[in-house]
Each structure stands twice: as structure tokens, then as C-alpha cells.
Image 1 (spheres, rainbow, N blue to C red):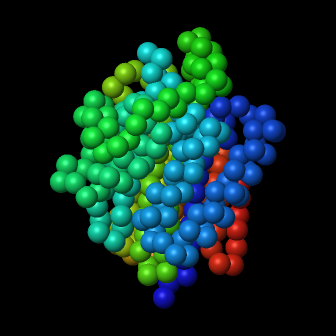
Image 2 (cartoon, rainbow, N blue to C red; image 1 turned 90 degrees about the horizontal axis):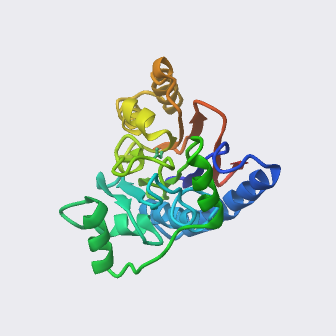
Length: 284
Ligand code: GLY
């Protein structure tokens, strides 16, 4: 019997606004979501829990995924999400999906398919054929942000969850509205193994600048290093050291098969929460 553990993140605090009210609201949201997801984990698998936590984060407009996603340069929201089941080592994802409420649930549907990563129009057609109806994820503050970005670029955000269940199974899920104001067709890291990965030994969910995360193959490298016997903390430190030469902008949450949990960011500050039986840590 393994002691369950869960960690979630809500992107970078520099994202959206930096007001004390937003900070407090994000803290409260993380506390609420990690507690709900922790309760859920007591009776569900790591995979089910990672997906569940991501839907809660996607539904909260404070975070850049699902409702409240950032808007691309042509004024359209395109979202990406993926799931990695550490037990079966299956990865599924959607890239640049429009007009659905929970991209992570479309990724979940793809887990049982032969073709497991779909992009753009194909992803939308798949979603609609599986009962995902039209949903407009725009919120007023993102529209204002988009208008402002026509003049100046700003930061990034994403949400994610890694869970370890009582059977020792690990899973990771990650979802994003992207960088905001990106070129149409740009692919985020969140639906790649650089941004979201898990196996029997470790699970990692990333946030930050997708190009930097893919350059650094961040999640896949950490998981591989832990699989090969490196302690989690060392694997994270080494992978982040490798981001330094190009000033890579990334943040992660991770859990290993012993239940060790960690968060790290290259720049201030990833918004995260960690919880197991003995402790709870919220950083919003
Ligand atoms: N990490 C989110 C993105 O760069 O799209």
C-alpha cells in the first residue's frame, strides 16, 4: 500500500495580473482544488484524479486553461491538453482545440483510441463526435489582455496535476490556453512529453514558455533520470541547470514513486499546491 500524494499548479504568478487580490484568489482556488482532488484520490485512481483536478483548474477563470484561456494573435482561443498514464505508459492529447469547455476530457477520450494525439480541426471533429458541445472559453479580462498585447507581449501560464494513488500508480495531466498572442499554428509544450509525462517511477507537469520547455525536454528528462535511479531532487536540479544556457523559462510539479513531491521554477513564481496525508503546502 502506497501513501497517496497529489500536486497541482496554476502557471506563473506573473501571468494575468500581479495584484495582491489575484494572488489571494489564486491561493484560495488552489487550496479548494487540492482539497477536493485529495478527497477524490481516496476513492479513485491517480489517472482519474489527475484528470479531475485539471477539470477543476480549467473551469476556474483565474487560470490559463479551459475557461479563461489566453487569446491567440488572430483573436481565437486554441487550447492544448494531455494526459500521461504512468501505469500503462499511454500518452494522449489535443493540440489547438477550439470551442470546448474541458480539453483535458477530450484528451481522456483519446486514451482508448489508436490515434491518440489530435490537432486543430481533427481534434474538434473528434470532440464533437464524442458529445463535447460548443463552449466559448473567453472571459472579459482575457479580451482586455488581448487588446493590450496588440501593443506589448506578456507572460505565460498553464495548469496541471500529478497524482500518486494508494496502489502506487502515477499519472500526470496538463492543460493550457497557450502563450497568448501566438502565431496561429504554434504548438504548446503541454500536449508533448516535454510538458507532461509520467511512468511507473515519476510524473511531471510543466508550465512556462513552451519553446523553452521543449528545448529542455523538461518532463521527459526528469522522468527518465528518476527511472534510471537518480533521486527526484537531483533530477530536477540537473534538468533546470540545463535550461540556464538559454535562460529557459519553466516551472514544474513532480512526484516520484516513493511519494516525494517537488516544485521548481526558473523564474518567479510558479503557483502550486502539494498535499499528502501529513502535509499541505499552498503557494499562490
Ligand atoms: N506552457 C504553455 C505554452 O507555452 O503554451
